[in-house]
Structures are given as structure tokens and as C-alpha cells.
Image 1 (cartoon, rainbow, N blue to C red):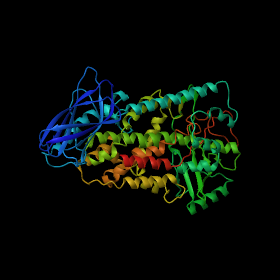
Image 2: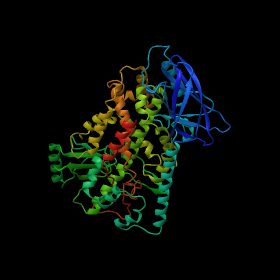
Image 3: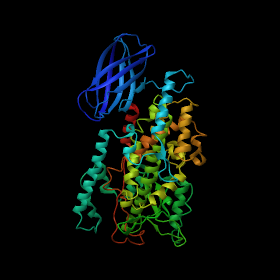
Image 4: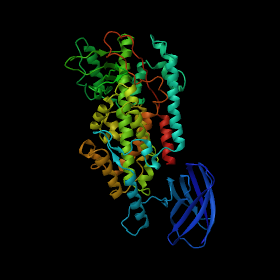
Length: 586
């Protein structure tokens, strides 16, 4: 018995009318009490109430909520409830919610301390978690978007998603405003250049205006440099292709007259300073047709050398692998005429865009993260410590992916309209990448070691990835937990389509759940930031999706009428700051 102080944090109201009535039950070990509250239709604020309870409730276990039903469905998003018991020195009991209250249903919120599943059938928390998972499995169902790709949430549009997986209003407005602003800028630039054609590289400046950043300005002035071209493979928007060479690639055919180049490559190989970026995954992918214009794709190979001062510089570029029609494809060298060498680098940047967006961004972060998100909602109750660790990182995964499937990579979507892998080629590429996906490739220490990128001072992405992985790897989870085992099986056997039968089997067999947790967190947040963060400020000067309108460059010089995309570059300091903040506040 005594006076309870109750804090109610509101995230949003669907319809902000007059004060809203809410029924609240305090449920303790020795009884419960029902209270009436009147909440203001505020957003992002906490209201405090004091209520007298005539009986001793004991330690609080649950808070139950029901919003008063009115003619208008004024749904309420509750962030959390805090309750201080009788006495001025009582510590607050925290009840996380972060869900919508709709209709007349009663929502039961357990006290927020993380708990693993128990064996006691009489345990009220055990009953709650079983009931919660049963309801979640009804709401979060699997679907197949394309055969051979990870499974997805069963939702064709964002409106089909469970309400708690939708964008918050602020997020939705920010997302949609960014799309409209980008579209408007594109239209204005199109009108501005409608009556003009480009005949010089400097004509690119005609559309380099509008939303710009210091980073974009810096790249604008040095995007043609070999130093920046090599730096991107280490620390750019797609630092996932580069690897240290263990031998000369079999596809690299050195024609007669290039003995000096072969000797140089052998010396670099023996000293451990030879690196390669191989885009063979693109070989044979059907190219798109945009407005009746045939597009083109390349599958380049780039050999690079690491200089003693830490600079990574290109040595040779092969645009396509050998084929029966061309057993010795032409090689491009830094000593070639400047425009011929530049066009070869442009083809590499364009191919890098395709793998970056489809393999490493869409598949490895978005689609795999969606599998993790759905499995988490189906297998881990809100009380589970892993659920509490992951939920901040997968909060908007389902809606952003659903929007992508309905607007970006759908039939007639943006990829079909603007990208050379569109029109079906992007699905072929995703299937190839999925067939090669391994668990180790999603684990930064294993992936960086396999690619020979450990211990390189100038590899900033590698340093940051390891630091962040070590931070989140400190989280400990008890082995053998049945809910966690079910979660692992849901990811590998269902979401990733029997992935344990391929090279990803170590995720459920030779590795413990303890390693899956930090990999999942890193994939859902840090890796997504690393792969995606620097696309946007560099949109004006990056390897744009529009490919050159001819086949590959023909030695010794360029062909007229080529688009001239640029380069992408970026440091990882901001990534560290953002992710550390997410860890601390999550």
C-alpha cells in the first residue's frame, strides 16, 4: 500500500485530439491494482502521475495497458512505463514497450530485466514469453521473393507490415522528403542540361551543384588520380572486393611484349605487396536495355601494388576475362594515353557500383539482415537479452526492404529504369552472390584475414571493423539456450534456405551462438553504415549506375560519347562515432 509515481513516455499518437484515457494495471507478486490515466496527445514527452494504492502489491512484475476505445482509432505508440513504489528511496521499475496500442486489446509489459527461458511452467514470465512468441509467429511470416535468394517478410507493400515494424512518423517524413528532394534536383539538372551535350570532362560541372558536401567537393577535384582510385578499394564505399594476391590470377593473360610487367607483378607478389580486385561475378550477366538503348557490363580485374608509404596504386586493368572469342583480352596500363587509362578506370568504377549495390549492400546487409530480423521476431521474446541487443539495429529493416522490393528492384522499378544490371540481370547477380555467401564472409575478423587485409596501416575500414566487432563481441550469452538455438535454426534453415548445407554451415555447427551475436549486430548496423553511408554525399561524383553507351574501351584510345562517372571515397571516423553511440544508447 502507498503512493506510486508513474512515468509514461509517449512516442506518438496516430490522431492528436483531446486528452486520451488509458487504463493501467500494476501487477505485483502479491496482487494488482487498476488505475485510470488521462494522457495528453504529445509526442516524445513523458508525463508523470501519482496514484494511491490501498494494498501491498509486492515486487512489480508486469504493467498492463489498454487505451480507451473511441470512434476514431487514435492509436498510441508507448515508449515505456516507469514506476516508483511507495517511499521516496524506491528505485524505478522499468517496463519497455515501444509498440502501438490499438483497439481494445490489453497489452502486457513485463519488467524490463533480461531473462533467459526457464523450465518452471508456473513462472509467469515463462508463460508471457510463450504467449508473445505465439502471437509474433502469427504476425511475422516468411515469404519467397525470388527463388535462390534469402526469404523475406510476407508483405508486398509497407502497408502490409505489422504496425510495430513500420516507420515512425518522423522517420517516414524524413525518408520521403529525401526522395522528393533528390527527385526534384534530378529534374532541375535534367532541364538545365536538356539542350546541351557534353564534349569535355569539365562539362560534368554543369550538374555538380545543389546538395554538396566537403567530401564531394574534395573528390570532385581529384577523382581522376590513381592514388584516389586505389584508396577507394581500401576505404571507399565498397571495401569488400580487394584482397592480397596469393598467386597471379589465372585470368590474367600477359601477351607478348609485357615481360617487364610480368616481372614487376612477380616481384610484388613475392614481397606481399600485390593486391587484386576481381569482378568476375559480373561475367555473363545480361545487360539492361534502357529506353531502347543497349547497355553494357564489364567484369574487370585490377592488379594493384602497395607502396611503402601506404598508397595503393593500380598497375594493370583487364576489362573482361578471357573468352573463346578473345583469349588474350587487352590490358590497360598507367603508361597508356591518359583518356584510355581513365576510361579503363571508369569501367572498373561502374562494375564496382554493380557489386557494391547488389552483392555487398542489398544482399549481404539488407536481405541477410531481414532474415535475422524476421527470425528475431519469431524466435526471441522481448525479455531475451539478445532481443534487447538486436532490436535497435533491426528496427526499420523490414519496411526499408519492403519498399526496396516494391520500388527499387521490382519489375519496372528504379533498377530497371536506370541501372545496367536492371531488367533481370540484378536477380541473376544476386543468385550468384547468394551461392557464394559464407558465414565467414559476414564475420569481419575472418573475412579480413581471408582477404589478407590485417595489419595494413592505411586500411582504415579494416581497423574500424575490427574495433567495432571487438566492442560488441564482449556481450555474453549462455550457451545451449533453446530460444537462441531456435533462432539460429530459423536463420540458417528457413531464412537462408538451408544455408547450413553450404559453406555457411559453420554458423550452426562449428561456431557458437556467442559469435553469431556480434556478427549480427555488426551486419545490421556497422556494416550497413560502412557500405551505405558514403553513397549519398558522393552521389554527384560517384560511379553512377548509367554505364557508357558502348562496349569496353578499345586500345589505344577512347571512343566518343561516353558518360564520365567519377569516384567514391571516404574516411570511417564518422562510422565509428555513430555506431559507438548506437551501442551506448541501445
